[in-house]
Image 1 (cartoon, protein in one colour):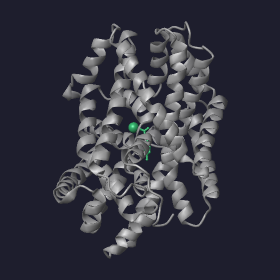
Image 2 (cartoon, rainbow, N blue to C red):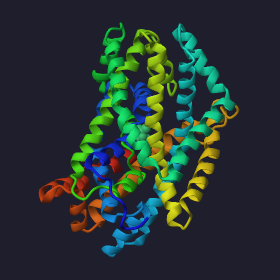
Image 3 (cartoon, rainbow, N blue to C red):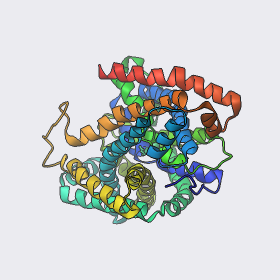
Image 4 (tube, rainbow, N blue to C red):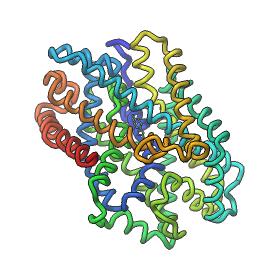
Length: 446
Ligand code: PFF
Ligand code: NA
């Protein structure tokens, strides 16, 4: 890539591309189960606070670096550091981001593959007339079937890398933009249906009546990691998109719009899923299978349930597709920066992510008892450490770079919020966001 990148044609196109990256498994799969594991409402309060105090300012920091540099992440960082005589080693932050998304994509593809499986089952009417226990048992059986899971993982990664290699992400984004309102609509419908079930009151209480005694330093760290994950922050992935941002657009407004949409989707999914949990007397802390078991149960109760469920998994797949394209972009851009062609770079990334993803696949069968670190198996490790440690560390360095290292003139122009808007952003990043990430990381790790 070079300094004269093509810009997104409209402001809306930029917001929709970033929303496409943000809205994905993080909202519909990860948010409900991680909230369930961490005590409900108190966790939700922390997560929303982190979105506001860290997510928004750091999202602006990350995108403005890309926008000021107008290059791939590593090159933007190196270029901007050079302008102020800072160390060129800031480039390495781009490399760290690429490593982080590598880890994330390896499991993201596996879990997106679960959606493929569920889509196929739903289309075939496989959930019709099944009870909650039967659906839960079916999911367990599927987890143990490593060949099927590996097949779906392969298919999903192939879909992702083909789009990335062909440089046709924009075409897919257009489709995504057309269909995402339908996903919101389906979630609203589902939440509306949830309001008629017995578990609805308990679900609302679980989500919105905080019990602050549930909060420990570790819970705080989980909430912070999830805020970064769901907003796609801290891995230079949005930095890559910032390079294409149109000239006259307010970054704070764009970031605000993305955050509202992202949190909205998570809340709707949460309401729908926890209503099922409490109606069926299930355990909210049931873990990564939560969405996959609850939603088929909920849809089964609706008229034309099989049809709605199929549409839902199709839309979810589309949402995770655009997110995984965003996950792959920093790696492919980095390899391209090292001289590989786009096609070769995509192939190298695809094959290596695929291999590591197989370890996640096998974590539910052959490698279930292989616990390399902290008593966690590979899937648990790769869904935890990159999200809760690498993303916040990356976000911290991104914030330091944007608010302390970059030239003020460059940063202010790239934020596009005028003099006082810039000052406010800078004060918040310097004195709230940066110390907060550092404090939470230290407390959580101790
Ligand atoms: N934000 C995505 C989600 O919520 O599913 C996940 C993600 C995308 C994380 C891109 C990190 C990233 F760089
Ligand atoms: Na998200």
